[in-house]
Length: 202
Image 1 (cartoon, one colour):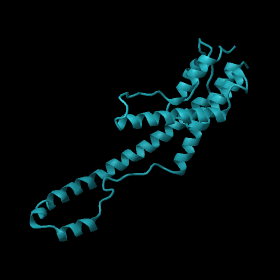
Image 2 (cartoon, helix red, strand yellow):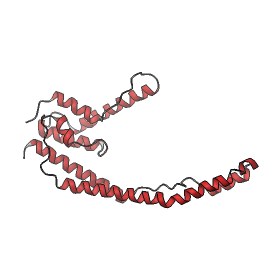
Image 3 (cartoon, one colour):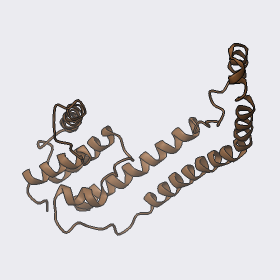
């Protein structure tokens, strides 16, 4: 197996492991249902009635009507909640099944990290910083050797990029900067820089 295919294989294995982890988390801690009446308390309503004046009492029928409507919506919202939880589990199971049978993956025309990550790296929301650093570290090690950059250095670089962006956003919100930046994921910036520094892999 050549180096490029080994990197793709590691990416597929990592994506399957992440999907399995998310599914296990979902089974262990199911999605919490938020009732339309969350935060509502008859005790507080009764206390309010005892302390309000006659003008405020005129709003009582409307308040009772609204509560009644919310009660009627509980079965609907709960049904939607059950469906969303089921759909999320199904989606994860389909991902796991897909990643078990990936064959003939696409290969990038340009032989650099940026092109390879664009095809087979993680999407923006499916992985943690640790997942990204681990996979990218493996890729660099396979394609260019262990001496280029370590997993710990990758994590530190990603942390620095994120920190600089947060500081820039705070400065903009506080009016200390006129520049409002729209940022791509930190890993994209790091991979772009590495791709510029490193030669095409074989």
